[in-house]
Structure formats: structure tokens, C-alpha cells
Image 1: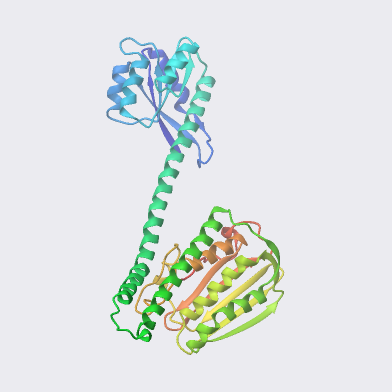
Image 2: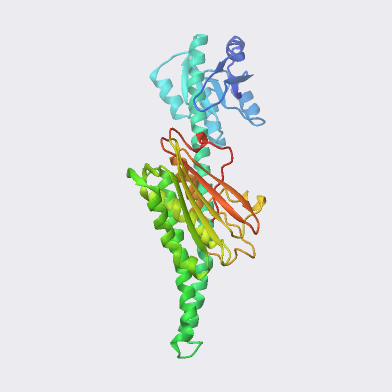
Length: 391
């Protein structure tokens, strides 16, 4: 339950007491706020006293009388504009004239209420003001979070691009200076390293585009009946050259109904990432087992490798975008840190999830479940253990 602090400024003791009594046990429900909002009321008998109180503590809402002995309500508002307080002001006036309302609004008042007013009129005015205050603060908080996310995103992106760009630049300088003489074959390794680094950056950009399209909801989904088995075969075919270089064998097992209504591109991303990672993080002469199973409600994709595996502590770090495990075993393995995070988001589009079982030096098993008839997000999917996957 949230409590908003209210300051009542009026030179009439009866008015201060009436407002305080009306709001003492009053509670309201506001959108996006769990529980009721209540009010704690403090009073001040003059504008001068109100400014003294505001110098020592903060308030959310102020009910300010327009006509008082000494400083007027407008005088107080002028002082408050210089302080830039996070507070909304309701002007209390004995005459509900347009001129008074315009003047109060220009001076910074959010609303006004005319004397005499009933408790119900007071509560309705307070409700509108509290609702606006909450929305205003939420908007500022969301804007601040957006700036922070943008800053973190650019920082991480800059970090991820700095190393490959630096490497390419170094190799190009070596080529420019002809450090290996005039034999072109002497530069083959440098060129291959440049191409490898450029390919890594291209993969990072492609993953970023996929991620932003999915998270923004702007990706156009083309739903049709697709055969997951055919998509898996295509994904395996794409990594066979790399697998052959390291003696990694890939096996595909199928069971049940493997057709479903889905976006073929999304399922291609899922299987391409799962299979390519299983090869990348495997050991020489290792094995990858891809299993596809379908029943009336779910299609399950399981990719098991005999690779380097992960500890529980390492697995726990893989929930965020750009998260990569960097150690002696993974140091030279390229990746964007996004691919399997995208897999988790796509699984969520199908009411599914991603889970992982892994042991160091033994291997990892990633399991993706996709609902044939998704009714909600991944939070409603089966299984309590969800994991953003490894890259």
C-alpha cells in the first residue's frame, strides 16, 4: 500500500481540520498500482509556514488556499516554481472564476477546487490529482530506464565491436606495410583472420536485428504449416563443413507429429542456433544428437552435445543478452552472445521455454518446448526452470 503525503495550507482552522478528517481513512485504487493508495495529511496555517515546512520535508500533493493573510496562494506558487518540487498543487478558492483558474494554472497549479466543497468533491479532486501524479512519475521512471538501457546497450555493443575491428585494423596495417614480403601466400592467414572477424561482426548485426524485431513486435510473422524435421535437416546441413573439420558427428532422431503452425524463419533461428552452438562448443571427434518429438500439445526440440559443458555458476550468468562465458575453453570461440537469448524469446512466442542440463567436460543438453496452441507468454509455459541459452 502506497501512502501519498498531503500538505493542506489554509488560514482557516476549520478548513484544515475538515480536509484532514476527510482524507484520514480515505483509500483509492489507481491503475498499475498494487493495493490501495492512502493519504497522510499535514497542515500549515499560512503560506510562509508552508514554505518553511517544504524546506524540511517533501510532499506529493498540496491543497493551497488562494486568499490568506500574508502571502497569497499565487505568491506561494511563484516561490515553489523556483524549487522545482515533484509535487502537484490544488488551489482552493472561494470564487470559482475563470480568471482565478487561469491565473492559478499559469502559476503552476494542477487543479483547483472552489469553496465550499463537499467531502466527495474533495476526494474526487484528490483522486484525479493522485492518478496524474502516479502516471507522471511512472513516465519519468520509464524514460530514465530507457536511457539507461540505451546506454548499456551502446556500451556493450561498442565493447563487442571494438575487439574485432581492432584485430582487422592490425592485420590490414600488416598487409599495408608488406611485413611478410612480396609472397602473397604469406598473407593468407592474415586475410583469413580478417574474414573471420568480419563474419563475427556480421553475425552480431544479424542477431541484433532479429532481437530488436522480436522485442519490438515489429517483426512480420508469416504463420503457415511447417515441417520442423525439414528445418532441422537444413540447420544440420549448414554446419556440416565445420563439424567435419573437427570430426563431430551429428545425428537426427524424429518421433511423432512434427508439423505445426509457425513462422518458418523463427524456427530456423531456433534450430540454427542450437545446432551451431552444439558444434562450436564441442570437442574434436565429438557428437551432437538432435531429437525432435511431437504430441498433441507440444513439439520438443532437444540438442545434446559432448562438449565442454557448463558449471551451475556459469549457466546462471546466461540469462541476459550479450552474456557469454569467457574462460580458457571458450576464449577463441566466436559468438555474439545473443543467439540463444533470441531462442528463448522465440520460444516465448509459442508459449514455450528453454531449459538446460549441463556438466563441465561432459556436455550440455538444451531443450526447447513449443506449444502447438500457445495461449500466453513463456511465463505460462510448462516447467519452472527457464534459461536464456548459451552463445
